[in-house]
Amino acid sequence: MASSLLSSEGVAEGQRVWIKNKSSDPREPPFLAGTVVEADGTTAKIALDNWGSGETVAVSESELDVANAVSAELSGGEERAEPDNCDLLQLSEATLLHNTLLRYRRDEIYTFTGPIVTSLNPCKPIDGLYSTERMKAAKPREEDELGAPNPHIYSVGANAYKTLCETGRNQSIVVTGISGAGKTEANKYLLKYLVWRASKEGTESSPMAQTVLDSTPVFEAFGNATTVMNPNSSRFGKFLTLQFSASGRMQGAFMKTYLLEKSRITSQLPGEQNYHVLYTVAKGLSSAQRTEFGLPKGSDAVESFKLLNLKKAGDVKWADFPCDFKELTEAFAVIPSLNDKQASCWRVIMAVLYLGNLSFTGQGEDDAKVKDPAVVAAVARLLSCETAQLEKAICTQNMKAGLDWISKPNTVAYASDVKNALTKALYSRLFDYIVEMVNVSLEKSGDEMRYFIGAVDIFGFECFPTNSLEQLCINFANERMQHMFTEAVFESVIAEYQKEGIDVADITFE
View 1 (cartoon, helix red, strand yellow):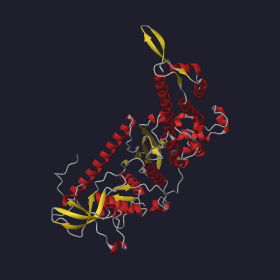
View 2 (cartoon, helix red, strand yellow):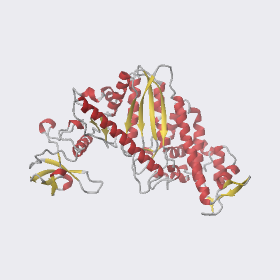
View 3 (cartoon, one colour):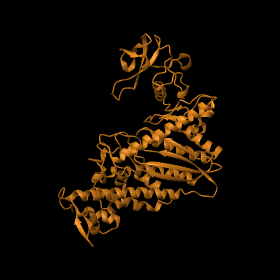
View 4 (cartoon, rainbow, N blue to C red):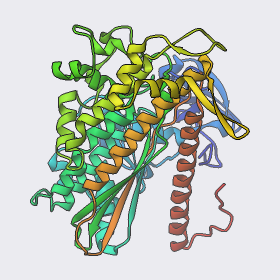
């Protein structure tokens, strides 16, 4: 996008403009609004308002973006906000951001930019925003040409479903944004809309579609965690394909996951937490389960485990969790392939938590010896293995010397690494198993030819003081996804220009 959209005549006195805010304070807006008080064709003096506190600054006219005029007749004295950024008379980065902000302040969090829907996380519920009436009113962008556009996440789903039914071509939807932008919620409502459309707008029951919806809290519990930027951040990526017949009925679904953040299981940054399910299970166990899993009477399980990274149970903001233990067990119960696996899953979760409490006598290069035998015994009992064999696997390693194998004690540092590796492997294998079991329940049915609508939900970009290799992979995946998204939009715009006979020979994408 060009840095300035000024005409060759430049700016005139009294004209409203935007200038780049040079402050590095993240609390301040990226652009400042002001009025031209003097201009000579090269440099303009701008009287700033709002954040500029009325000061006057001299700026090169090439650095200015013209603001859109405020029309009292059209907007009753308020600044007009367009539902589609492409309808702005003056279109630049500054005017696009400002228009989106105006809509956000009016609880209109969705805005079209051509075929793209952008959204801002309201961080609060908005009455009627995701009602059945909104579903019924949702239309693809091109069908709104004769009336006022109605941007919504449902519009994206409506366009994908309509195109699939009319063309028989598979569709994919990409939801991207930084951590905390609302991607997980957007995907949930998108899924809800597609299930509603596939059931003939709610008039037909579909056990398959209901299973898809019921699996959502399970994946959020096992794959989401609290970060410094987001209390319910997805720490894995997934590609969910909803499979449809030629008549538009949902016949099955399949989920593929990527890059579960394993490092979070054994270490978290200050102010962050482990995966939701670890807290949910530790808090929600019944008296009988606490006895079965060896928890002392009267102990607070949430405070008992080091992996939960808590000084006291009150540090957990339970309202931010996707579900409590009762709701999680209910979600398991309605997924056929998981219903009878609950007890086994809770045992593995508890084994992971107990492994976090396992420590060794000595330090550094000393031979590792388990400090509290009761901890390793609890893990062995939960995993149905021999205590001595488990302790040996963690505290020793087998080495080949010639034709013989010898057992060598591990150092404390090495044994700690082995324990952490086992902890991460157990949790990640459990996560993969749950994905596999959900996919079994969502297997396609019938022989009719199927198409799919795919939805990509990828963890958000985040940058911490110390970033792990996994965070680097997450950020790299985000950058590549954004590049692919931008390139696809660019190519669609070029194709539109070519249809209109516009010369695009000199326009390239880099």
